[in-house]
Amino acid sequence: MVSKRLSGEAGHRRKFMAIVDDTPECSRAVRYAGRRAKNSNGGLVLCYVIPEHEVQQWIGVQEFMRAEAREEAEAIVNKVAEAAREGIGIEPEIVIREGDRSEQINAVVEEDRDIAILVLAAGSAKDGPGPLVSLLAGRGKAFTIPVTVLPDGLEDADIDALC
Image (cartoon, rainbow, N blue to C red):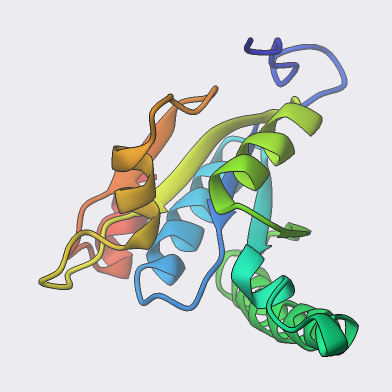
């Protein structure tokens, strides 16, 4: 069941969420989400999901690996957040989760009912549009909020003009 979005009510603001990872298309999704948020007086949420296999692999050193994966996630998302601050002038919220990417994205959306739009960007790789867009296309069920998918090939100026 879809919980009611609160972004249109008094004291709330619409948030755009971009999923942070190490793909080239990530920066385009963050730029679009950040620009849309800034131009609409909304908020930007940057969500990074540490994959399950990175967390649960070696039982004897599981905590060490979990801490290492968390540090890597924090470094990646902090770099992206700094780029949003400097390039867009917006202070993003940072969310880091562990587990199944699809389940964690849905959980974040359900927990923060101000998140109104999920922003993804398609990649240019010959093996498909990228892991997030492929995940979206292969899901058995839809996300509970609208999803904006940016096409490959948009330059920063194109993204800025769309926002």
